[in-house]
Length: 129
Image (cartoon, rainbow, N blue to C red; front, side, top):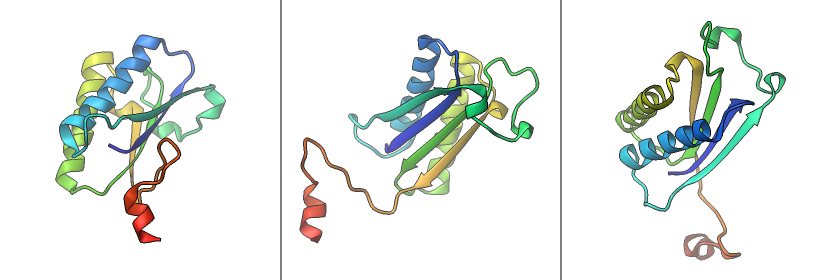
């Protein structure tokens, strides 16, 4: 699915964090082309003064605070991305009552994928050099 970075205001319980993680993974597995073992998430809880955003994004009386999801993944069609975003919004709202106006989702497209696993570069990259 790519790499997902999630930033939350500090103070969330483990169950809440796992619900966010599960929602992102479920949406990715059911909306984006990927393999079953593709799960790379970084979740960071920040102090209120470490996640700075325009207050226009924050819904009044939002119990969950503000959440930022930044996804780096291969390009997809608009329809695929809309299905993915819709699934994440539905699951976050359904499972932990996160309202869509309390989070920002950024889908960044990776131009070239290169990673190392167990100290080895993928065959694709090695054949290009």
